Structure formats: structure tokens, C-alpha cells
Image 1: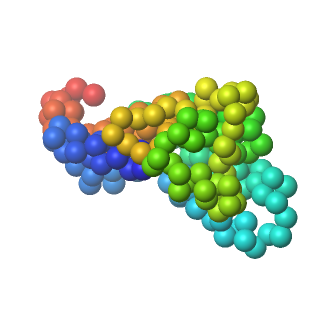
Image 2: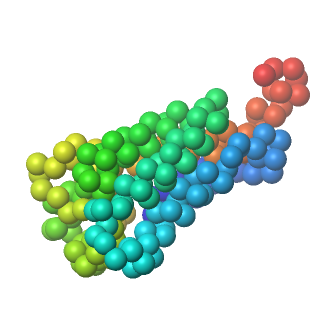
Length: 190
């Protein structure tokens, strides 16, 4: 949800700056399907969980590692692009806390007191959401888990989510360019 709002905000700011999405075609991202594959793996986890008759703890690493490898590879292949360093850093922070917690994103105990989180908590307890874990205050690297409550948004975010969102915002602005930058380039300025 947060990432979607960041994309919408970046598009709005990009257009206000005179940017256009069609500028992407002049300098497209390399291997853009890698993060899509990573997100597809994550989206398929509930289905995989229903098909594999063993607990998720036994196989989840086989899904999470390729998911993040795809994101890391995408960031490495496009490392020179604005915002990509933040995308890589945010992904690394999320991956670190997930690995430290049995390949599940730890969800702060604060969520237990949030009325808007109750349905999600029930789904985690029922095994319908496999890649999150409700943890105690002593969970490894909890400060990197989903512990940040964002104003006006439901749920919690991680430090990695926020860093990743900042990177996506900057990347979209770079892709869209701006009228000012285009004018400078036509005058011979880089």
C-alpha cells in the first residue's frame, strides 16, 4: 500500500515538474522483469503453501531467497540510476531482518493493539499469510522489522520499506525527467 502511494506521489510530482513517462523509452531500465518476478514469487506464497504439504518454515527460504536475488540483481544492473542505491539498501535491510527471523518479516507487538491490523493478524495466525510473523520485543533485529506506524496509513512499515520507497520515488522522478532538465540538455548542459 505504501509503495503504491509513493508511486502515485512520484508520478504527480514528476508531472508537476514537467516530466513525462514517455521519457522512459529513451533510457529504459535493464531487466525490469526481475523485480516483477520477485513480487510474483511473494504473491504466489499462499498458493505454494496450499500445494506443499509441509510447514512453510521448511520451504519458505526457497522462495524468499530467489525473490530477493531477483531484486538485488535488478538493482545491480541499474545501479547508476538515481534512487537505485536506496532501493538496494532498503531491500538489503528487509532481507537481513527476514533472514534473522526465519525468513519471515517480523511484525511488531504494537500490531496486536491496532484495530485495523486484526484481520491481518488473524490471517497470519491461520497460516494464510506465510511471510510474516507476529513476534515479541526480543525478536532478532526487530528495529528493522515492521515497527513504524505511518500517520494516516493502516499497518506498519519497516525502515527498509521507507528507504526502498524513497529510492522508488527518486527513480520515477529520474525516469520522467523534467522540462527544465530537457531545456538544459538542449542548450548543451548535461
